[in-house]
Length: 458
Image 1 (cartoon, one colour):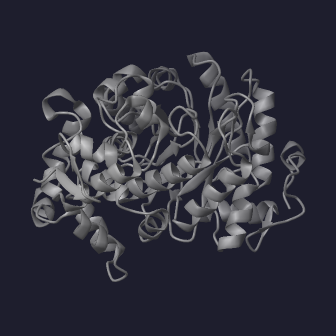
Image 2 (image 1 turned 135 degrees about the horizontal axis):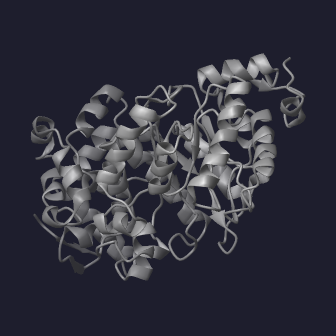
């Protein structure tokens, strides 16, 4: 394994694989904050050169966190198909990248090969790709899952309807929910971020969601994104629940900082199968985001992209229905501006798809970041072109509770029309029955939340 190279008569040497991965990363403010970023563009290219010549075995044998110390590493390593890994272990990252991007390499071939890759391999491939490479490679892949409906089928773009409210007012939440539905949003999930993480508050909102879902016969899923422990308690107490949610990290210490472990997820999964309201079998929802480990001091010296890839390796072990990166939520300390946010969104989607999870994205930014609504609309369009399973929809694109900006509920309708995509099939048919869409396009009923208040059918 060679960890040095010479460019423009200047020698570069790297201490270990972790340093190569970090310095091969595209520029990220979070990596600079951590003190692990390349010191110059030339050093970045040198790291990419070294990385391209490393073997799949080099990446597997040098995980970002040692196997003996970290549950996430153990879950990823133990999940590798050893026969397929044996076929790939002698490939260089450059050879594997070219094979992935070859127009003759099929979806089935890529999915099979991915069973022999660890998160570090997938992160390394990501660092050797340009933005268009990330779109092109991800577009080859579809990953489906089923809860009450099936997400991820080719030709679809789904949405998570996020009717957040600054005080968890059930009536305010309901108004936002009806507005989102009237724009054709909510086929992936009707999912609230609660202000109050209590069993009573979660249960109240879930019961309203369940009532609306049943009353209007909406083929979708419901979830309130409290802490996993609160959701488990609410489910045990009789709350209607299709899925359980949790933010996850790429290290055991990161997950411990979030207040859970793999055993907690297994408990939630088993409980949902006994007492949940969904058909299943995929009943979990995970969120991630580059920089979350650094923000809690649990990144273990690794870069943001590598830790993010490890999140997806952890998620895969639990066969979730949904995973999304909240790509610009943490702020400019980790992704400085729209250029870094767009790059990260494309990286995360590619890595999630290659890992084999049903991947979506919250295309978002904070108000103290050099970004605007045009930037996240650009990202949403790029991700839809790359075959993302879903994006988020918030009334007006302005989340009044989380105080960040994301896609508006009507953005998905425009993207679907531009790219010839449709909602999840069952929800698509429901929209047509409600008169909200006709032949896949919004009608003049779009945006009229009162059709639900009056209980109308077309």
